[in-house]
Image (cartoon, rainbow, N blue to C red; front, top):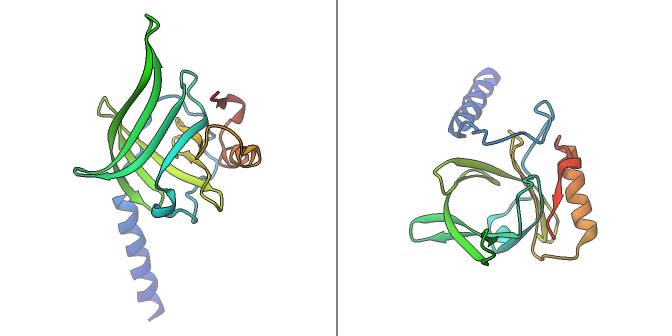
Length: 177
């Protein structure tokens, strides 16, 4: 009896693992691949909804960025907004709806404008759902996000510690002004 229960549990877990997509590496990794990494158990779709601003990340070219996860007519999307300045000095806000597929609680795959998939996991979120950390297993992506573009220094510090705990090289973390 115990053996059949254990076998059923193992098969169920195996089936869940089979549904997770293979990670796609898009650039250099900023984390130790041998470090453990995991999604927060605190994740809640309803509480995570709304606008988030990127306060820090690993992309050296990243500027002011924000996003919102929305359920649209074609399914879930990440409305990604960025502030862009062209070489001619013309600046403005730009946004695009990128298709998103959840593949676990707090785990998503977004399709970038060029069609490339990028995984993001919610590694941590504070109790009030004001500050969170996004990353992924391959480590080429990591963001500290917040509901505001300023303030919350204690939460931002905690988020930085979460990235460090998950194996990220926080010395390469770039704060967005």
